[in-house]
Length: 245
Ligand code: 6PG
View 1: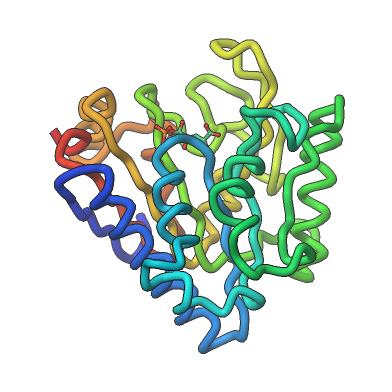
View 2 (view 1 turned 180 degrees about the vertical axis):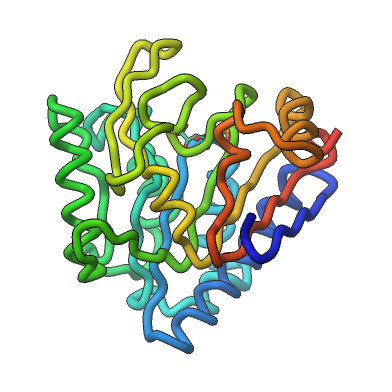
């Protein structure tokens, strides 16, 4: 278990997004104050979309509180599709956030999931991360913040129950076949996520309540999200009342 786990419950998905935006800005400004930059891995799914829209909105306070050229954007997982595919996590973040803020293209590190060989795409992304962080082979660099969601089956990033990705202990990024979706996914591994300085889950919706309850009240390693326990970093769950049951 990490040093600290916080659970924050908000009334609805919009309030979850607001709390997520506040946490994002606080993490960014603290990292920039101490290291001059903010390294963040985004997630896909519907929940972060509202967060991205808030961060990009010129009529909200967040956009002007961020030094966008100090942000370095990565993704914790990606679908095995090109960047212009409607299912691309990159496209979702680009459309709702990155195309709307003054962030240099060079600061955006997407997973090259248009590569037909998803294993090669995962290896290339691992190399990109190792080069960026000057991380020696066998070490796991610490992102300032990793944003995560959770599916009703307890998956997080693209760490799905009963997949080979769950037993990966040496790679930072892996490709994994997800039988229930009949596709490969490219995902950060447990050790890379658990090396982060901060991990933030944003979870909304009543369909997730049973798994949320099990994970937050017991030891439930069968649900991948429950195995996210930063070694030294912080772990925060922001839930709406529906997900909190
Ligand atoms: C993805 C995600 C995934 C997501 C959960 C929750 O690529 O699909 O990164 O792990 O976060 O499925 O998704 P929702 O927020 O849409 O419920």
